[in-house]
Length: 216
Ligand code: G3P
Image 1: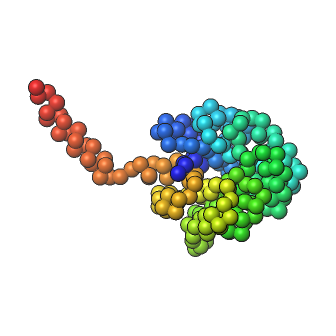
Image 2 (image 1 turned 135 degrees about the vertical axis):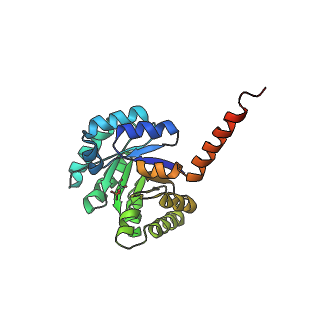
Image 3 (image 1 turned 135 degrees about the horizontal axis):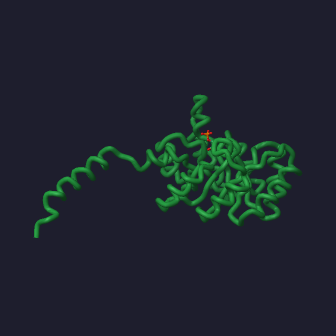
């Protein structure tokens, strides 16, 4: 299973990359606004830190302009993946870009039908938003299971990125289902590593070590 970081905060990216568990990064316009930085500057900085797919999202609304934007982003670094919205225009842009060998991540996926369309047009990745589905009392992880079953039936190569991850349970359930990737926000990484019994155990071992460390 691969872990991507779902943030545009470069300090966080450096921190979790140092753990050795980060295989890629996903950004979006909201994450960039939070970080207060330009897309081009941040993508290039991320590429210095993480050697894996880095999603950069287009903001055009028609297919032709999305393709132009995508081609510009793709020149920034070999690891750039173009994030396209799951719209009619996004679907058209996806077809054109994937035929040219440019890898795309279709985002804002909320149904298995949308994931099927994206796979048919050659998406390298799809990003179903599990947390936002849970927010409206739907079952986000059930969507992941449906998409994975469909992709398996037809041997689609499209990889599933579990997105809008809100807590470690989303990550664990993704792993149990065999999802390819989870894109994880920094605060969920912190919750994944933490356990109070681990902290307590380390403290007790260190305390006891003090009692024997000078013995010959
Ligand atoms: O990549 C962005 C996606 O993960 C959205 O997350 O928390 O805004 O629903 P969220």
